[in-house]
Structures are given as C-alpha cells and as structure tokens.
Length: 226
Image 1: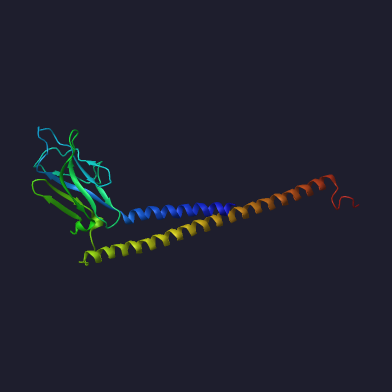
Image 2: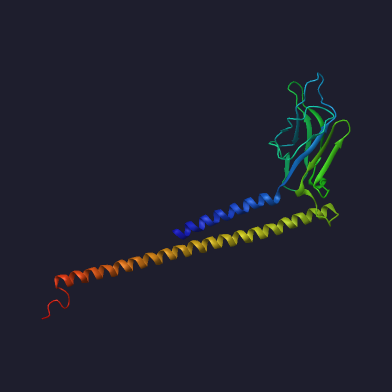
C-alpha cells in the first residue's frame, strides 16, 4: 500500500518536471523594445488607443503610445509584456492597430511575424512601414545558431537541440524519481528496523521485570530449594 502511494507520488512529480521543462524549452518570448507611430488615425485630435495583436490572441494595449513622431522605449518588464510567444517555428499574423468605439479599428500595419525574422546576434528585429509605424522587437530564443546560414538548417538544428534537451530532461527526471523511490523505501525499512528493535527491547524488559517479581516472591526456579 505504502509502496503504491510512493510510486504514484513519484509519477506525478515526474510528469510535472516534464511539463515545466517542455514549456521552457519550446517557448520563445517576444518583447517590444521601442515603437514609433507616424500617424494617429484620429481626425478630431484625440489621443489614440494603440494595441498590438496576433490573430487568435489577446489584444495588448500600449498605454503610453499617444503621440506621433515620438519614439517610445520599453524595458521589457512592463505589466503588458511580453507581446507574444512562439511555441514553434510557425509564423503568426500580427499587427499594430488603433482602437475605435464607433467605427472599425484602423490598421497601422499587419504582417506575417516569424521567429526567422530575428537574425541579429542580439535577438532584435526592426519592423518599419513608411508613414505608419517603426518598431523594434526582441526575441533572444529566436536567434539561429551562429554558424548555420540556411534558415531551414537553422530550424532543424534548433529542433534537434530541443530534442537533445528533451532526452537530458527525461533522464534527469527519471533518475530523480528513482532516487526518491529508493529514498522512501530506505526510510521505510529503517523505520521498520527501529520498530522491531523497540519491540524486542520492550519484550526483553518485560521478561526482566517478570524475573524480578518472581525473585521477590520466591517463586522462581530456585525459590523452593533449601
């Protein structure tokens, strides 16, 4: 019963390790370093509400972005960061938009946003459309291997690296689970040994107490001798 419980606990720990490491290995985070708009898409002079969005994802409102021809810089630690994540090498349809309540939202620019866009060693990608928007993104996990020039080869190398990492993570997790199981088994055996020793000591003490009582009453094996 106890061993079955320990096995289930170890299995749950193993699955948790795998899930966490998989998330770390497979996800590339994209943050916004700077952005500048060249028009507000507003006709009455009011401040625009600009947001970034990838199809099927949540809209990311850029609260400080209000004026045209002003470069807004960010640290990547803002509450609305990161902008998006790449779980694979697949591209996304993303863009900058101006939100409106009466009419449909205006589009500053919309494009296919891909991990392969990040070719610089520092992980930066500059996207610019004349008279609309100029933005700099950062994705360090998207940077290809330095000595691989072919994007397809870079993709294969990245996938291969992830596969190797997977194997290492799996081996470490399995080893950790085995150590936990052996540790629990050893602790259980030690507890059983201590329990037996206490029972033996109590049993011997009981006999010693019985002998003492018999000696006092003179009913021991030598009690009737003259």
